View 1 (tube, helix red, strand yellow):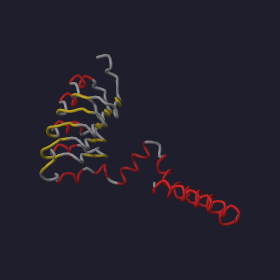
View 2: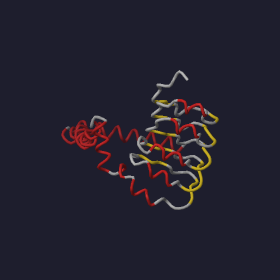
View 3: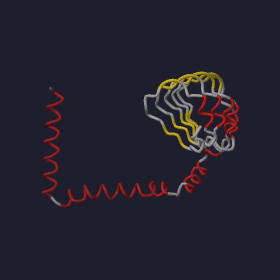
View 4: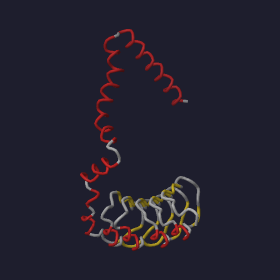
Length: 191
């Protein structure tokens, strides 16, 4: 296959239907596979174990069968596993606990049964301190987003409320506007 150097395949949010082709396993350098929100079905193909997956997002499809045990082969690469909203069934395999680098695990809204493996406590890469390490690896920008959010709220709030408190004419215009808008809204909802 001519695409052997492909590392990211992002085909989510389309209307693809059918099964994942077994030829996907020829993409040995594939690190990130995003097929979320399509109409794919059938079992997860065994050929995916030939890839070098760091991220696997197959959420919101109709995959069936058991969560394959070969998923544990990605113990030294897999960081994000998202299989939410499928029709997977059976017990959660213990091999999932081999994914020691796993930071996001989303297997909600499936038909799993049995107990949650006790070895999930060993998935320490999901802890809060590890997420900050990931944030630093990604450039550390998102921490500034969270630190700046309260200041943005305060400044934005006072840019709107401050003039209304100081200028009586602005306050009157603003409340007339609100009254007029409320009257229009009330008329529309009554009809």
